[in-house]
Each structure stands twice: as structure tokens, then as C-alpha cells.
Length: 159
Image 1 (cartoon, rainbow, N blue to C red):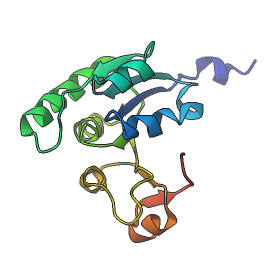
Image 2 (cartoon, rainbow, N blue to C red):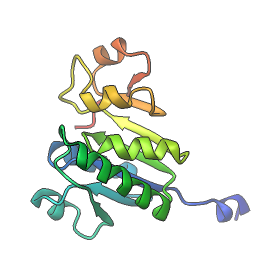
Image 3 (cartoon, one colour):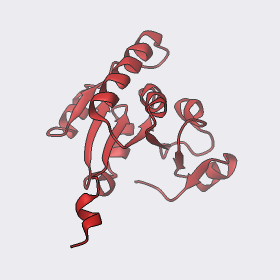
Image 4 (cartoon, helix red, strand yellow):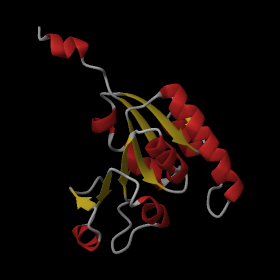
């Protein structure tokens, strides 16, 4: 057996998203994340509690829309969790909870990926606009959206 395979570190993912449609889209990428050690960051709502049963989950503070207090609480939470769990890559489909985790991840030197939702056809979401210059990879699900933003890449649709 090749020794490089034995010594290869298994990648750990941090999957960050709001509950609802953001969670459903990121969860549907199970062919990507099932093969890796992973943790989820989302809100403690009925859909996420049910869908992520048995997964490692950390509950973020909500609401995040126009809530400065929860932004600071989630920044602290991001620092604490990312230092404790030390993921290799942070992947997010938005929304507001993505901002503190991706920003803190960048400060800590983590690779970051933002996946814009399928519903964003002509413009980026507010979270995507805020994080556009900070993420390593920005994936969109419409070719016309990719053509408007230099850093955005269209690789197909998730759902």
C-alpha cells in the first residue's frame, strides 16, 4: 500500500447555513460531504433538528438579519468552534450566519467556499456580496450570474 495514503490527513468540513432552503441545498450535496468528517453550524429550528439528527451540530444565534448583537455573538461562537474543531474547509450556502463563520475562518487561515442559492438568478444575495472578496471559491448556479461577477464560477445546479 502507498504510504502517502496512510499518512494522508482526512479532511474535515465545516458546513454553515441558515435553516430552511439554505440547509436543504447544502444537505443535498451529500455526495460531497458524506465522505469527510464534518460538522454543521445552523439554527435550532425543527427542520434542522430533524434533518441533522445524528450529525455533529453547533447551534448558532438567530435571527441574523439586521441583528448586530447576534452578529457579535456568532463571531465569538465562530472563533470558539473553529479553534476547537479545526476544520480544513468552511462551506456555506448562506445566509447571515455565513458571514461571521467565513470571516473568522479567513482570519484563521481556513479555505472557504460560498455556494449561492438556486433562487439567485441575476444578483448575489446580501451575504454573498459581503463575502465576495473574502471567500476562496464563490459558486453560483446560473451562468448569467457567473458572467456578471468575475470571481463567481458556474459548475451546474445543485438541485
